[in-house]
Length: 388
Image 1 (cartoon, rainbow, N blue to C red):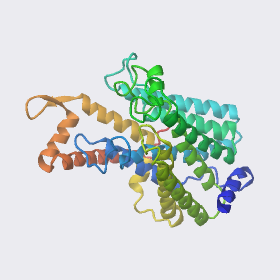
Image 2: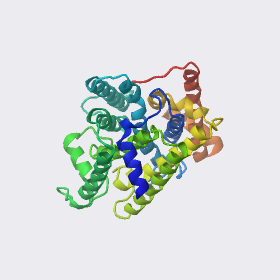
Image 3: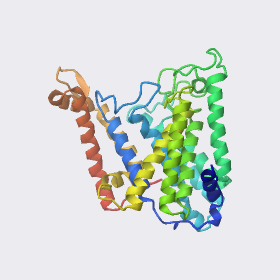
Image 4: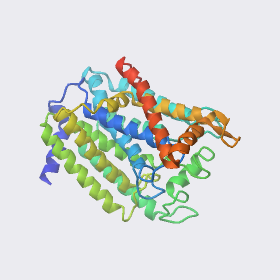
């Protein structure tokens, strides 16, 4: 308990503490980000069958693919103190920073909507509104305001996170949804779905429900705020091994808390449940701690190049890999049976003929990862960074 209070006091008094240079880059964060993007491209690029251990859980529970989105939300939160450090150190006004935040979030949201419609579906009457980048934009906007504009103290952020998770749990489990009742945790009939059908009807992912609900952005905000608190703490002048110990300690606490909560509120990415926030946040802390130990403390970096190539150009990897996949899906060729099939599926079918359905699909995904790794490697060597 005293260790926890000590950490909170250190972060609460951050402005009075010496911190790392504003221009310093946390190499382990780039490695963590790059690993997450590698995983994202891999699991999203299967043209056919996928090993169950690599895929998403059907609804409740989690698989490897269910780590990707929470990890990325967490990583964005960790990066906030680092991305704003130089601007704040040079005395930029909060008003100027606010417009910078608003512009970045608007562009991120717009890119997400563009990807929803690319390449053939730009019908404003039916285009999907929400997706991964849109949720990140919403959470980033609120997180940045809390850090830069509102400047909430760490204790207040912790209380805010706890309040959101508890209130979300109470709402989803105990407050009746009109026409469905209380405690419905299926795709249709929960409060997130109820709000989406009244706000985004006709603009959702599936027929009658949205996999990235508007309401789910609030518990996702907690995931990003967990990253924010982590980034703020890592920028203090505390000894590296003390930071490492705290990352592992709180990672374990969050994982256990999330697992215990899951008995009443299942781990579910579609609903972004409170148990998922704690459990995935704990795993993210553990993974970041491991990268921090290997890369920033021990300087063992021989293995990090692929992660760095993706990590420093994460937005470009996300956008271009999605556009490439959707382009190949939109191009039809003649299949083996004479019927038209997408070029994406044809490539998977070709490898599946020699390797089997699951191995062929995995081989195609690996080739697709290597393709984008080579493209991003060129940008990396030329020090070209694509940012908003």
